[in-house]
Amino acid sequence: MSAPRTTPRRALTAVAALPLLALALTACGYGSEAKQDDAKKADVAAGGKKLSADTVKIGYFPNLTHATALVGIQEGIIAKELGSTTVKPSTFNAGPSEIEALNAGSIDIGFIGPSPAINGYTKSKGKSLRIIGGSASGGVKLVVDPKKIKTLDDLKGKKIATPQLGNTQDVAFLNWISEKGWKVDANSGKGDVSVVRTDNKVTPDAYRSGSIDGAWAPEPTASKLVAQGAKVLLDESTLWPDNKFVITNIIVSQKFLTEHPDVVEAVLRGTVDTNAWINANPDKAKASANAALKTLSGKELPPEVLDPAWKSIQFIDDPLAATLDTEAEHAVKAGLLEQTELTGIYDLKPLNKILKAAGEPEVADAGLGVK
Image 1 (cartoon, rainbow, N blue to C red):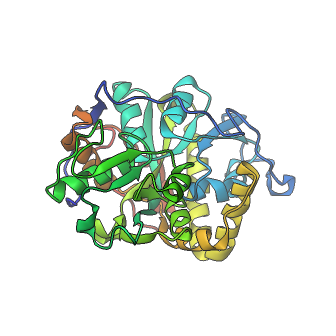
Image 2 (cartoon, rainbow, N blue to C red):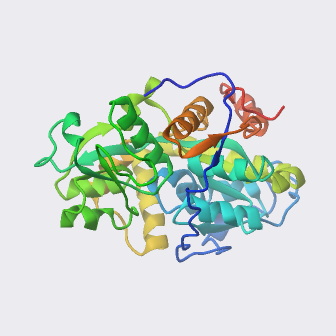
């Protein structure tokens, strides 16, 4: 996989063939109230004064790669920074529906993957959102049926699932296929490898039935397949410099950022504190994330899925802008997206203010920040 670039990249916009699926929300839906321990809620913000908004609506997925949100809300870490400003969380099954919610004002801040963030920014001609921070890196693996596939070269002629046409994992797999010198039509998924777009929720059943031979999948889907007898053939992190690539960003609507910068900064302080707590208390954080998943979905992940999935994800504040830049380039090369201007997708000034105050190194926007 190509090394991330550090120069500004021309952004991209979706080709007409790429669907914007309005997938269903999970049970929490828009604006669902968080269950918060009142003892963890302060009467005022950490800075000692009331913030400019009574509520902040935060969207995320019930996925381990969104554990900053899962844990930050579950443990009251984000609420602590917000003081009397109430967190109203919503959960989503896929990026397009979360972007729709952001555009509609149903959420103010969201945790989301790079591809939907790019699509949301470019479809709005740079007016809908900004990426304001990082959340997670890694957590994506190529897992296969070891009876059918023993080496990477054995993938030729096999059926491999990705979550959705044009999503982050789909683009990564198409790029990997291209670098192998194999040919696949990006839209149909037909070619030297059959790319089968399969929702993560049904991928384990598809694998069990034999309708796919493996998957390029995020966690915990990858570890669910391993629990069924699949083997990890490749961890995507090994294809990136320093073994890091963005899997989850933090975005905000530009309207909310303009009107309530103090609230945005408070949420970011909460996410920075959450990531620090996760990394200092990995076992407690893992249990907290699993408890949040049980609350949201009705069941927790078993240890044989949770443990390997958790180990493969890094929780970081750096949005790894250069890797988003490279992922955009890969989507253009695959023919799924057109080139356009991406400069301005990042506004890392609030995050860098927080990091500087904490004595931590500031993070870069790879030349794609607000001018």
